[in-house]
Image (cartoon, rainbow, N blue to C red; front, side, top):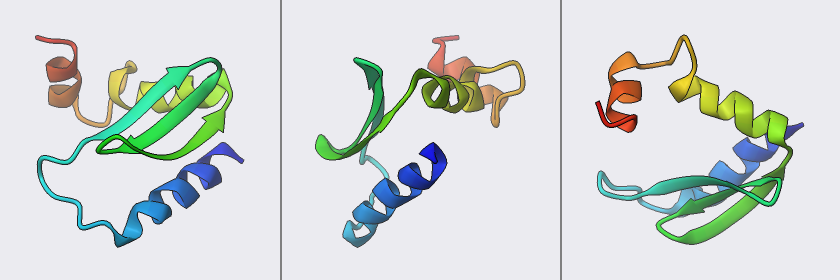
Length: 75
């Protein structure tokens, strides 16, 4: 399942001391979501459906944080 793969990928970063200015990147390219931390590849999760669901968390009609959605969209 895609969510389980995301958890595995995030756990691989577990030994990294994540700081405030670190960057977690979730890019959808060629049908897969590519996960990176500060440019370091963590893994990929195949499927457009997973990426759409993940994107809706921040940009959907009921985002987790409305202020973050507004900031991400430049407003």
